[in-house]
Amino acid sequence: MYFKFWGTRGSIPVPGSNTLKYGGNTPCIELRSNENELLIFDAGTGIRDLGKSLVDEKYNQKIRIFLSHYHWDHIQGLPFFQPLYQKNTEIIFLGESKHEKSIEDILSGQMNRHYFPMDLKDVASKISFENIESNKNYNIGNLEILTLSANHSSSTLAFKIIANNKSIVYMPDNELSPGNFSEDNIREIIKLENEEFINFCNETDFLIHDSFYDESALKLKKGWGHSDNNTLAYFSLFSKVKNLILFHYNPEYNDNKIEEIANYINNIFSIEKSKINCIAAFEGLRIQF
Picture (tube, rainbow, N blue to C red):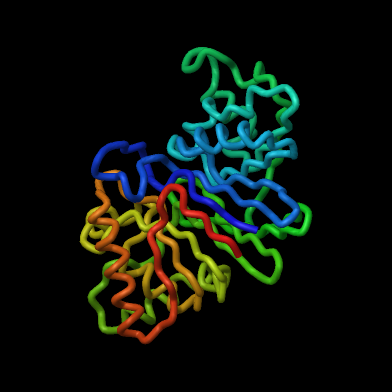
């Protein structure tokens, strides 16, 4: 069983020499079960290369695409996902309906002939749509998927995947509270304000979390729905996670800046004598568990 990163960036793709190490594609993660069930989390531009890989592999089982929310960076790669155009492929989209619009309505609004040469309803694959909600449990084969509402500017789902006594939490867009405070009791404030998230992530093996800002940037972006390095570090300590994987990077941050954020968090873990392993996700990173 493994998961693999195909896109790690937030907001907008940023290809170029300054993002070669960690990647410039927007969010997409592949998860494979021991039974070769395929779950895809978000359909940012990273899903394009994933689709090419699946075609080369001749993958012939159902493809399930879980959408945390419908901001452009999480769906903009979908029209370029090659399996969408294969007759013998079955694709299930799973996400929340919003503002009285179904998943099909929302995705069709993006992929129609005003913006793309083909409407979603005309693709060759067999597609279907499944509405999922927060605070629910879902089962796919031997996988259990739990959902929770994240703290973001648009209604957004976080996912916890459990299998083989291991767990992964995927929180790509989430603002931990309170962020940049100078009070002496900052740790207790973080713990108190994020109790629901801490319980959801408690002792998870892998936490993939929004690391969009550093602490100084958050001072200007409070309430925008993203987290900073300082709060994320203490949140991870309180959640007792085993591995923290940084994700959903600010498009303004180059590879060196991402390394600075990772080093800052690892330094806090070292000071706190924590065994949490913090790494920055990069395109192509594959983790077996």
